[in-house]
Length: 309
Image 1 (tube, rainbow, N blue to C red):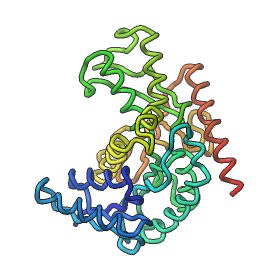
Image 2: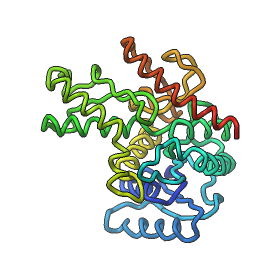
Image 3: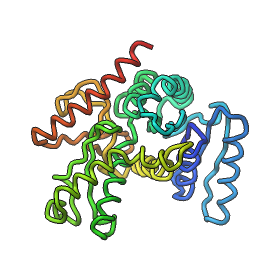
Image 4: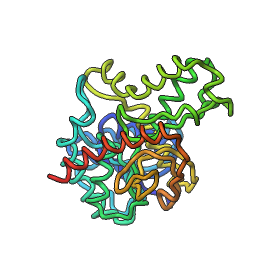
C-alpha cells in the first residue's frame, strides 16, 4: 500500500510539491485549497502526466479535508505570498489564520501524520502548527534550511565553477535575513571554502544567500520562489517517507540545544519515519553563537505577536 501525502495549498509551491512527489512515486497525493476548482484541476492535470512520465500514483484535489484522512505526511504551503518590499514578517497576521485553520483540519483527519511547514514567516508558522496540532515536537518541522543551504551551495558552485553536488553548505537560524550561513563548516569535497575564495567573495555569497528569497521576489514582482522551495520540501518528505534518515538543516523545536528554549530555529537534524529523530548540536564559535542568538531573538519577536492573537 502506497503512502499518502496531503499538500495544503494548490498555488505554485503546493502544486510543484505534488508534481515532484508524483514524479518520484513517493506517495498518493491529495491537494487541498480553498479556491473552488483549482486543486481539482491541478490534481487532474498532474495525474494526466502519469502516462508520459511513467508514474502510477493517484492524485486528487479537494476544497475540504475528508479525502486527506489517514495521511502519513502533510505539507502546508497555504498562505499569502510576499510582494516586493514586503518582509516575511509582514505576512505574519494574514498567514497565522491560514495556518491555524489548515493545521486544525490536518490534525483532525490525520492525527498520526508528520507536518512539514513551508508557509512564511516560516519559524513562527511552524510554532503555530505545533500549538494548534498539539502533536509531539518530533512530528512538526519547518522547511527553511534545506532551501537556504541550496541557495548557498548554488552561489558557491557558481563562483568556483564546480558541481553543486560537491558543495556542502551549512545554514542555521531563522528563515530570514538573520539566517546564519556557516562558512567555516562549508566545503567543496572536503576542501574548506576559506582555501578556495577570499573573504570578500565569501561575504558577498553569504549576503546574497540571506536575501535569496527577496532577490527572486524582486524579479517576479507578483509572487515568490516556488521551484526550489518545493524541491526542498520534497527532499524532506522523501527522507521521512522512505525513512532515509538524511541529516538536513530544518526548523526544529529546541529545548535547550544551542542555549535556545521553546523556539523553532534552523539546525541540523536527522529526518526519518518518526520525523525529527535527532537534533545535532554543533560546537559554535562565539561569533557564530551570537549570530544564532540574534536570529532566535528575531523569531521570538514574531512568537510574542502570535501569542497576543
